[in-house]
Image (tube, rainbow, N blue to C red):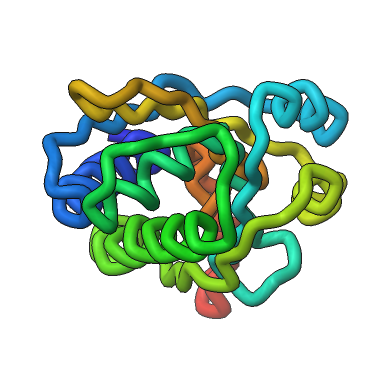
Length: 192
């Protein structure tokens, strides 16, 4: 299994577990595809969503993730967390706070499995809602990947969201075959 497949499995398994626990419902989450993107593609990606949550996973400025989603998904998650079953397209500061906590839990749950399976020391932190322009700036000028995800909350909703990462997020680009380099044999000093 490739490192990319391993990290996808870690995310899906742990995100699902976290949401099953904090929402008290049987939630299904999938990562449907991971597409290579350029910074110029972000406006098109962002145009389908209303809310943007940024988080870091390392100390370098380029180690950023942005999750793009619709306000309704923020409302669904935040309201289900406190036992409400009404959802709206407008969100409040309380909705944002609750959703940031949900994102903190979903990524924190992945830190140990990522370390144990892939030997990557990721610390997910600095979780905050940002504007779309800020989301674009945070992602920088490098190549990107768009992780197209679906969350299904039976009897409530099925919503899509996108997680945008730098290409090679967590150094999980497909492994390249290493070509062995032949070491020249030094002539022996005892040779005639």
